[in-house]
Length: 352
Image 1 (tube, rainbow, N blue to C red):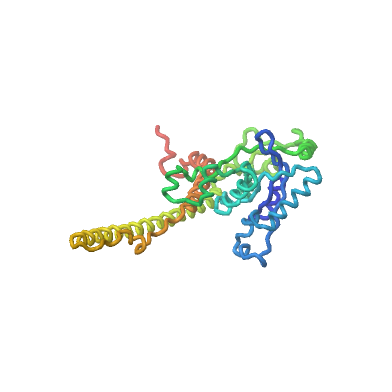
Image 2: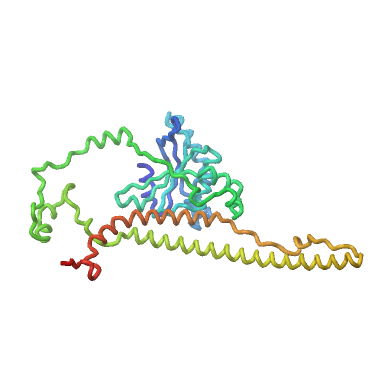
């Protein structure tokens, strides 16, 4: 509840905080949380560039604040083991370099079992709680430590973008106070006081004029589910997916430019080596001292291969968007197939 409240209040700004709990027989139990202080935009350049909230867990001041809070929790006999951190997201947009660097810091400096909870505020606004737990894979931890994300390294380690994050199973339990509160909620209205719909309504107007529709109750059927309008969240997710695809094409073009530049330099080196060998062959016949054949390393400079990390993160983010589109489009597709006879000419005709 604290995570949901904090993320909702800070939306659309990124909200971050610390997780405390216990590791019981291999199960990580998160029992308490507290938010990180918001950096001052007047004193921090990164905050002015809208990166401050995402960098909050790695800021030195917030790390000291986290240590002080854990010490105070320990004094009042509350679970005070740092087990990870949490962050908010908008439409599943959280897989980036800031997220990876923060989680790497937690798994490296604190414990490899620390987790990152991601609460998607936009998805949760549709009456479907979106709270997921992630951890960096050991394979990616090793590659990120070496900071070598070249094509040769990735092929040798067989590291794919699907191997960056490991999603962990998550179970949410209410506290005893919340459970007691739920048991004290009033029961649903009795059936005698609840108006009901006609058993066989003659027309749509009779349903709309029924007291059960004009004075809805929790058990009244929701006719909004029959609407054929496209979910606005589906539209936004598709736009984000297209942006991720454009970024992927940009990264691919940059890598293609590097390959062409590398091929040009290698061609120049090959030509120079062939020319130097011919000169040395002529010098051998004339009994002159040979020229060094390794001067190409000083004369020619091969271009540096760009890191593939951003491409991998973008591919993983695009996969996240695709999964969300698949979840959004299921209900809309069912409605479209149900009424396609009225939408497409000739589809509704029944053969005699």
